[in-house]
Image (cartoon, rainbow, N blue to C red; front, top):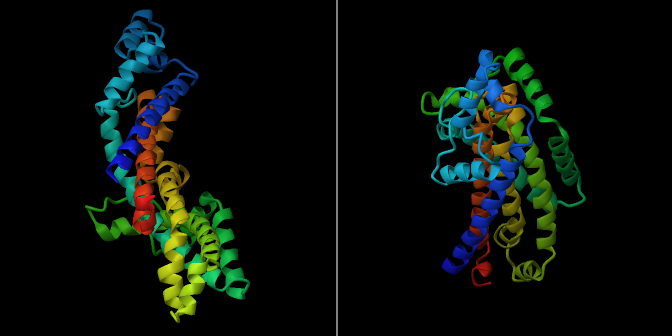
Amino acid sequence: MLPWLLRRLGQIVPTLLILSVLIFGLQQLMPGDPALILAGEERGDPQVLAQIRAELFLDRPLPEQYLHWITRAVQGDFGFSWRIREPVAKLILEKLPVTFQLAVMAFLIALAIGIPAGVLSAVRRDRPTDWLVNAVALFGISTPNFWLGIMMILLFSVQLGWLPPSGYVPLTEDPLQSLATTIMPAFVLGSGIAGVLMRHTRAAMLGALGQDYVRTARAKGLGERAVVGRHALRNALIPVVTLGTIEFGRLLAGAVLTEQIFTIPGFGKLIVDAVFNRDYPVVQGVVMATALIFTALSLIADLLYMAVNPRLRTA
């Protein structure tokens, strides 16, 4: 396994390097001069603009700017926010745990709903249970997050008064209140992923239930629960693992609308504010951190393959 792991790490390094070039290059296409924004009322003074460009390395050629940025990024230094004068790495470390908590809760909800529903739908294929589960999954996939979030706020906060409509309390400060402030946005995010997981689990289970080893297990007299859980499900989970890691990465990177609706100060709100304020170092740092998360999740998915299916360890 060690040579395989070293090869995978060797593939990740050039991938991240190419991504860093794209992130830096596309950032330069954004309209507006950062020096004019930072100068404020003194934007008409050429000396002030020149001083700002020199401090931010904006007066150098683009290749030199990129080398300066990537050299510091490799060391964990993504520069300073031009808007609030805080280190970008510090902002990421402050906001990422908030979105991470939300993503973990949403992913657990998706797993708790999607995989059992997919197995049940495959086992009871072409029966009313299968049709009902597919209808619920389609509803979860097609319902916009912002609409579902607003409806949940109206029901559980305005009408019933069970949960706070917005805000966030850190888990370390008050676990119960933290759960209360994140359960609705977590369900909003998890419902769509649950539908996707259900459809993929169903398709994978239908393929696994038709394999020879399943028929052999039934012929040996194993109970249906053992056949489905021990033999079919374990092999059907391999494509679901891939989908799960990708969806978890999307949760970390794509919870922008949900965080805006529920006023959660997470990763999504950080990058939205940075884009609107043309805070380039924050945008670059957040996107690069997201790329690192996705590549790490891809590696974790490969390791989970081997845990789920031992045959892959000798492949």
